[in-house]
Length: 123
Image 1 (cartoon, helix red, strand yellow):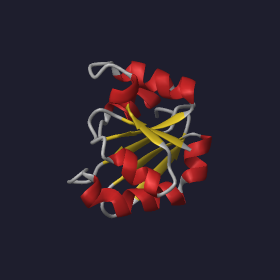
Image 2 (tube, one colour):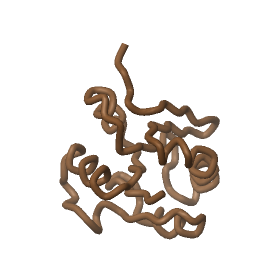
Image 3 (cartoon, rainbow, N blue to C red):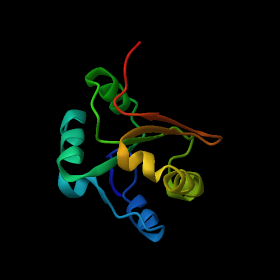
Image 4 (spheres, rainbow, N blue to C red):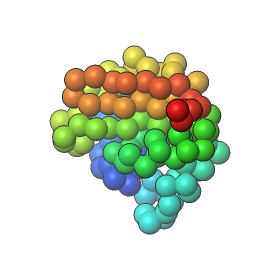
């Protein structure tokens, strides 16, 4: 599982995730910093990445389009720096790797992770 780290998260996440066996790349290495959310999602889908973000809009895009991918992990912790969220995030990645590989939206906070399988359907 490859991870594309959104601009709203530190590039430091790349080395942290690699340490735990998750290859990753920061969006700033492959795209324009001001790129639209749609462009980031399209790149991730085309290149087989799961998107790691702090942005709620990516989940909304999945719901609005009823897309089957790419998978998105939304980090909703107070502090999104690796020094504060590494343990929580890497545990969630390991626990839900199969869901993320198949297509899921995973929302992570300090206490729990919520998983919704893609495509998301609005009710």
